Image 1 (cartoon, one colour):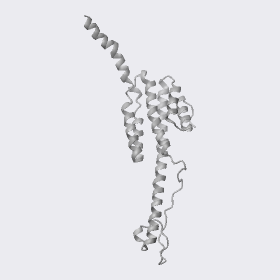
Image 2 (cartoon, one colour; image 1 turned 90 degrees about the horizontal axis):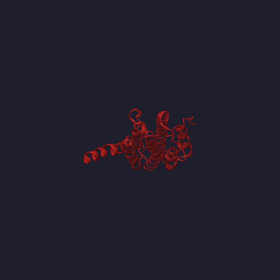
Image 3 (cartoon, helix red, strand yellow; image 1 turned 180 degrees about the vertical axis):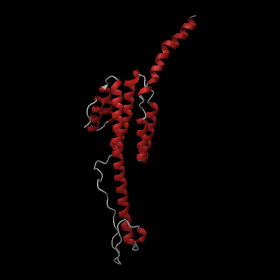
Length: 211
């Protein structure tokens, strides 16, 4: 009889605790997938990898599947995942900005024969080797600037989209979960996010208008 009672105690006394400890793992697969893609981005610097880090977080919140007792813990975990993404985004911005106007493709210099070819011409059509070499170098610089500008523009778009998703998720939590502002703001502080972003996310948490 004692053995039976002990068995029941294991189930009733400790079973609930085990369930409580695993309930908050609902977001863990999404967070792990996001972190994996972030690590890939650190190597590749590809927006596809950064986009891949954002996608799991977009799918991380299913309010219908969350136990109400887990709202606070899950919101903290999900915000931590977003904070890592935004930390990476901010570190990837060019502090000097990026060209808003379309870049102009260079034209080759005039050849000794007097021939002047048009901008962005294929270098193979340039007969003079010195003019061709100078043009190829200028063309490489131009292409690098275009890649950089496209990266920065794409990064900005991803940033905007991610902030909108986070805003929607925080709104969903705010409708049902108790306030936990201090802990959530601490997550943003520890991530070292810019003051402007932290203030924007704080406004989302509190349900205020984001400026």
